[in-house]
Length: 88
Image (cartoon, rainbow, N blue to C red; front, side, top):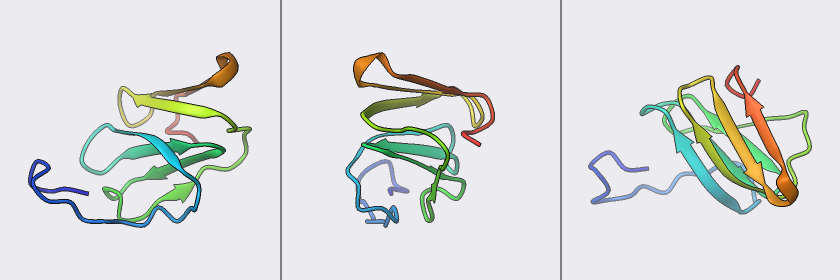
C-alpha cells in the first residue's frame, strides 16, 4: 500500500498464501485482487481482504473494475467472469 504516490510502500497481508496476479482499485478504498483459484475484495484500502466464495476461480489472470460494483475477471481457456454487485 502507498499513500504518497509510490515513493514508499507498506507491506500488507492478503490473508492467503496463494499467488496474486492482478489487482484493480476503483478508489482509495475499494479493490479486488485475483490469483490462481482466488478472488479477494477490500473496502478499506487493503488493510483487510475478504475471500470471495462460491465460484470456480482456477486459472484467473487479470481483473478490471469500472466502478465499485462492475467488474470483469479473465483467465486461461477463455474464462470470463462478470459481476455487477461488487463480486457478491
